[in-house]
Image 1: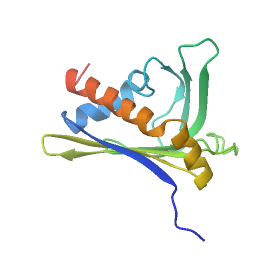
Image 2 (image 1 turned 45 degrees about the horizontal axis):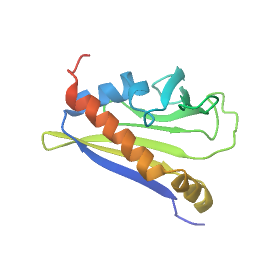
Image 3 (image 1 turned 180 degrees about the vertical axis):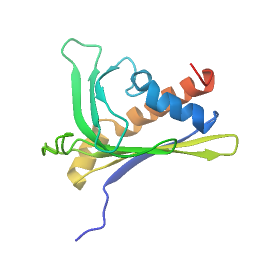
Image 4 (image 1 turned 60 degrees about the vertical axis):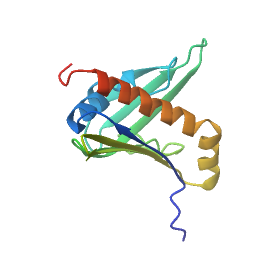
Length: 155
């Protein structure tokens, strides 16, 4: 049995308090979740373990979209959320692609943001890398940072 997690990840320092970053991560997800010019539509989002995590990412071209029907595996308020597309919130298995982990922690006067995607196989990991993981998820981290660094806490 292998201990490999087949993980891809990005990390970014955000010059904003963890509370502000967390608020934007969870309350304003459509504004940062996918790289522009793509847009995110939240179909269902329940911030709790076992909750639905259903989004549609729509591209600039007609009929260009990616649907994610998943479930929150872990939700630790102010720190971390984890989701997967391996099954839905009724525990019905689906064709799995990844587990997404999003974490923040205080670092100096700001926040360290980490986002990781773990895959079931090396092939799936390399497929995700080939889809532009590094560029896409780094862009998303930048979008989150821009929102957090320029927004008042209670917006």
